[in-house]
Length: 137
Length: 317
Image (cartoon, rainbow over all chains, first blue to last red; front, side, top):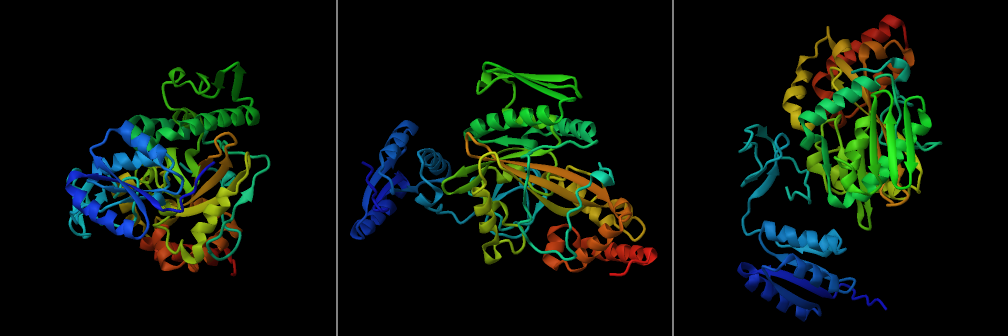
């Protein structure tokens, strides 16, 4: 029989640099009645997929990691059937904005949203608010 | 690459512009059609695919099942509706599609990737004038999961790959007002298996260029600055996309096809009703929509041209 958890369980992936932050969050969440499990990264994709597949329906996935590793876990979670609303990724400690170049597809990391030159094709770009969750830019 | 006026799907049924889901159910359900520009457009498509494959074809691995289904569906349609030009035979799991216009054939074993050299949607798209998009219907919405896109109107397939339906339409002014885009997505999600719906979308473009991707905006966008009172009728084209949405019955995903037509203003104004409707539509267009449709930079020249033509023809509004 399928057991619905009503969003009370959270599987948290965290790499070493975010572990303190993740553990602090776990304490807060536990007080609010959530069941949290922290998985220390790096973790193999097989292991991640196995853990994700074991989660009961209604569980959430939180990821504390830098961009590339976070994306790998996010893909694994999506493949395991988690929706985008059930996956949360912490923002990078850096405040840079990722801007997709409409001409050459290079993703530029810039600190302001003003017009700038693409570092690869050198076309002038005027950033818009059109955002791709897939490209994170 | 303009089409003959007789084949042009003029989009305006009223004298004013308003957002609407102007979709109509197609009976029989069709996802692709042919015009007399077939050979020229297929040649252009293949040149674009050869030169810019990464720009014109993109897919996510999870789209493969739908790509197979879409390819089989399209080849079936072509053979059934244009039997003098195409044939499609099945023997066990092996298929043979023949394109007699091009003197080509495609052989494949269904769902066997080792039997084909390109992905299925990339094969099917090379035999039809339409751009082809697969929208995956997931439990949390529609997502663009594959596409062969050679003739886009100022958008990038690479950028929107993997994007959800609402996010794709973010640049359209006012699209979220009264949750319009949410209603359109719900409408699409309710399309039944094997049903096809058709709508027309329009914009304006300079020259008869079909391929206006976001990636080459720097080349074609500046043409808008070249419109003058003297050349507006020749340069400015009404661009209409006949968009069809078909529910694939096996995967439950959506095959979205876009057939693009261009007609110069000089050809369009030969039809008095079209002239009148275009004029009134442009007249009442809001500034943000005019900007989005690429008209703002030459709207004055356009309006003067249409007014002068109406006056010369003695047409009252």
